[in-house]
Length: 127
Image (cartoon, rainbow, N blue to C red; front, side, top):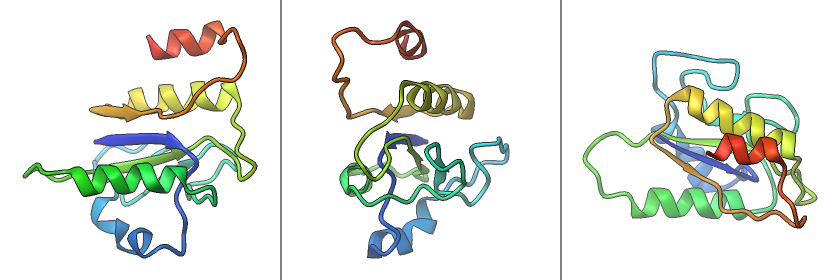
């Protein structure tokens, strides 16, 4: 399983409509991930990680497009960036721990931190 922590996906996009092929099909469910789900929206606290920024969609498309394995690819999106392009440390930390709890194989975090000193809690989550 690959989990993308980013801005979510665009609901009208053709790839999103076909995404059910990549939806989580695991047997264990948590508050943040249910079978058949595409992920979780940590901004709006709902099970649909839709967003309009495009970066999360581009990252997810790159993961799908570059996958060459024979095993089933489960791609999960955890939206932590709102439509204004900002995320909170709390959302990033909560989504990181949720991804770990899901037993993910890979977590993609292709975002930066604009403040000079990152929070200690986020550093702990990443370690």
